Amino acid sequence: MGDLRATTLTGREILLPAADVDAFQQRLRGPLIAPDDARYAEARQVWNANIDRRPGLICRPVGVADVLSAVRFARDHSLLVSVRGGAHSFPGTCVCDGGLVIDLSLMKGIRVDPIGRTVRAEGGVTWGEFDRETQAFGLATTGGTASDTGIAGLTLGGGLGWLGYKYGLASDNLRSVDLVTADGTLRIASDTEHPDLFWAVRGGGGNFGVVTSFEYRLHPVGPVLAGPVFHPFTKAKKVLQFYRDFASATHEQLTTYALPMTAPDGTKVVALAVCYSGPLDEGERLIAPVRRFGPPLEDQICPRAYTEFQSMFDAGFPPRNQYYEKAHFLRELNDDAIDIVVEHFARVPSPRSLLFFQQSGGAMRRGDTAYAHRDALWNLILVAQWLNPAESERHIRWTRELWQALRPYGTGGVYVNNIGREEDDGVDQVRAAYGANYPRLAALKKQYDPENLFRHNQNIQPAVSGEPVLRGVTHGHG
Image 1 (tube, helix red, strand yellow):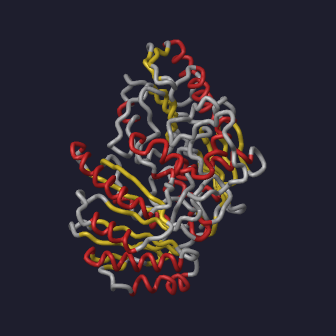
Image 2 (spheres, one colour; image 1 turned 180 degrees about the vertical axis):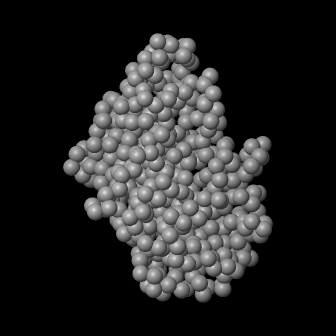
């Protein structure tokens, strides 16, 4: 390679000498991709086609040694860095303009211990890959709602998912992580090794290093009683009122989501989706009111493999469409908020857009980690999706207007994995994501990443001298 243009942490453009780049490449087992490489166009793409960034270099590690080399190279040259796991994010922070992308997509190792009920998975694994391996032994852990989501980003942000009511967040099921910190050192973080760092990565996002592997607890999970029922949108208010009451009453026992959406035939509907993991007769008893209410247009609830259910909604979020997202945590869902949702969705500009009430209940409401929103009962996600990039403005405007209208009904907090693009959500939303835990996280950021090398994320700024640290606050409310 010749000299390469690159962007530093301060935003300054520099030339990386060819000799330095060549030496870096020789230390790697995995590929190093520059803009003149035939693989570059594909390598810089992410799931959301509304994101279009051009990194200076893309490093694809195949092991920990490669990650160590990449972090040290970035540190030595003060390069802007982003870290890519599954790349299934709306703001696309896993790719940066002009900097170095550390792309973990080739790190796919998974090792299940069926006796000890644990699994170790590398940072490039997706939930679909993870679930296929663990379900071979009748085991699983909480893992999102789309099979092509990466385990890394979801877990580091907390990790809401269908099994959460019973087993907690994905991050609640971590036993340890291996991560390369900003000083180029591999550390193991667990309850007994660097416990402060372990607390921080369970909800603090990608701020503290590159996680090369995750060790999770697994749980027996056989067929789940799961699936959606569909109601006409003309009854949307009554359906959402029923959803509110039913989900509130059963949040310790099963997970229930609500999705105003447009069906393939172009008609608007409201889907109620449930997931119960346990004895099927008990599940049928709990879910019976969902089957009876309405009655629904269609009932697709049945016993099914967990892997089948985990991928059931993938078709609604295909890669390389245009996406934009905003979100609120809600403690309650009153009639006024329901009216706003129904009114705005009635004039949604794209049949691909939807709303997503994601229930947070049961074991997800308990835990001592950096995840700051245990008290919220719902995460309301507004997803705009369209095909023509020239139409972006009107779809984004619809989403922002609905989000703004719902602000009075939110907790003021937001799930870190649902923060939108930086130009919209900025520092205020980042602070809202980490809630009362922010000062402690900022102090740990100063300890482990004082130069803020890992900043191309929902960024926690290193604490400044004299800033108070609320060490007693470990699960602040958003």
